[in-house]
Image (cartoon, rainbow, N blue to C red; front, side, top):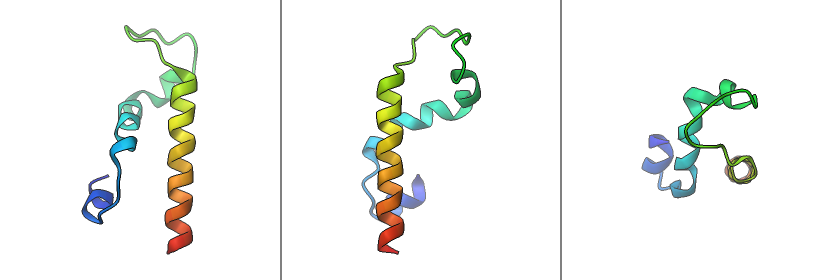
Length: 61
């Protein structure tokens, strides 16, 4: 993320995804308990936006 920011890329919308990193495996399963429920549709939309963003970067390279 720091490298993207240093390169001048707009990464503001990507920051919420960093919350998932340590818990990615646990959050895949419905049995995982958390104080804050996972908004799966929102997370899926954020990930789709990240993939589209990465694809645009690769196409420009």
